[in-house]
Structures are given as C-alpha cells and as structure tokens.
Length: 200
Image (cartoon, rainbow, N blue to C red; front, top):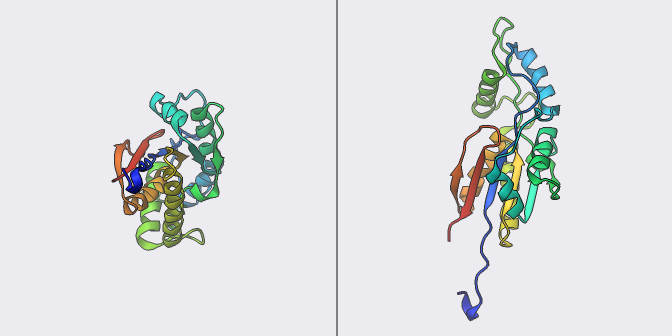
C-alpha cells in the first residue's frame, strides 16, 4: 500500500512485435545498388496473404489499453490483422532504422538477408548512413519511443507496439534503462514478440 492507504497503480506491460512476413521475395541475388532498390520496395510492401497472427498476440492486443504501429504498410497491415477492428495509432516515431548498403563493387552479390546484415553492421559500427538517419539520431528516436510507451504503461494499461525488428530492439535497450525486465523473447522472426514489465 502507498502512503495514506491508497494502492499503487500497477505498471502495464509493454510488448514489442515485429511485423508479419512482407509480400516481397528474398530469394534473389543483388548488387549494392540492387539491394538499395529492393529495400525501397520492401519499405512500401504490405504483408504476404494468408498469414494468421499467433493467438497469444491477438490476446495481448485485446488486453492492451494502447496499441501502436509505425506508418509503414507492413506494420499497419500487421496491426490490422492482430487488432481485428480495434483502433490503433500509427506514428512515424516507430519506423524501422535505415539500411543503406555500403558501396561494394558490382561483382559482389548477396541475398537481401545478407545485405541486411552487412548494411546494419556498416550503419551501426561505421555510421554509414548515406544521408539517411544516423545511428545517433535513431538512438535518440528510440529513447523518445521508449518514453512514450513507458508513459502509457504508467497508467496501468498494457501497451502493444507492432513495428520493426531492429528498431524494436533499440527501443528495448531504452526500456531497460527505464527499469523494465524482459519476460518474453522471440527474437527477430516475423510476428516475434518481446514483452517487458517494470521492476518494482
């Protein structure tokens, strides 16, 4: 009990979810320029048809007092599939961190999966941003996103974010700084969840 005999408000849980599988094939070999074009299409792509959200995720959406997505189509369609008519809010704050590929020679070709790993490493370790958002800027945005989710969770309501794998991970680092502990970890897979509750 808090002072004066009033009960303390329970802090809501925060769940970060990666979007479902997009409708864009990864079974291609690309140059750096080709991957840059592919990523541009990926950014605009919606979800591959026929996917069913995990039942636990649907349950968490039903229980959440606040539900968010990014403004990218794959995130919005994921939220629609999970929320089943329940309102949610889409914010630019939650879009994925950029993935500009390094300028490798054209004889080097990789699948989008490998280009993604290479590009993320160059962005994170060498600040290769090609005029897009820098790591420092993305970290500041992740801190802002974590603070927003935390503020909503402080009302006692659970919070659900349906967004993007890497930026969700960046948010999770900031939630740790705010006193949250991870209670569910499903990695970077499509529909994968990370759930956090604040330590007393």
